[in-house]
Length: 244
Image 1 (cartoon, rainbow, N blue to C red):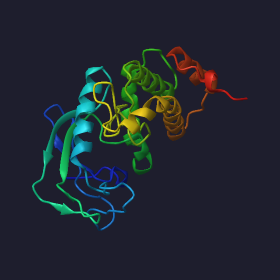
Image 2 (tube, rainbow, N blue to C red):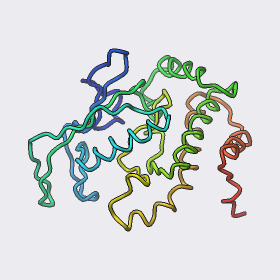
Image 3 (cartoon, rainbow, N blue to C red):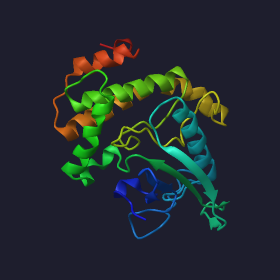
Image 4 (cartoon, rainbow, N blue to C red):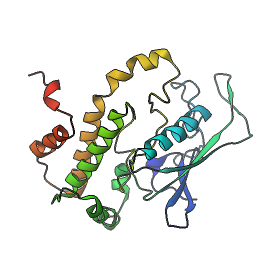
């Protein structure tokens, strides 16, 4: 078992598939600190390092749904519940759960600070395979993939609800769907569903932030007119949100 960087928290690489993909197990306790699980109380039963069954099942099911749309993502393998019981400070008793999946790249975009320049370049050079618009800058290749992914998600009324540099790998795989919802798998709370429609626009800006981050890591100058135009091309016109 190994953890690519401390930013992965509770996820560890536990092996490789026959075709070389990395097998990841999620819910194994914290990689950092000397403590395995920490319950700070603000997330009800949610505990640092622990994966709850309902979250693992939503991650698995939504991951399969999104993969079926043609978006490059992790391939779900299984959810397994451990028989050991954990008593939480709020009195609830839960059983730890593991989610296993495989990915092309074990490093997230946010892991750049822990990666060597050579590791990053090894992943970025592969983006040439998806450079359908013949961009000269790597961050624009990534931008096209990320914005297209967002278009596909929103066209199918899927809210990822956690788009960030933490949830894209350097192979441009979209991961982590435990907060996602769709018409097929809505939130169980009526109150949560009431707010879903208001959360879609912010995913445009969250995607923009990742593009900025990638450009910064790669040391590339950003042409914001070019990026804005790319968003518009995919039906995300930022002008509709302009105040001044």
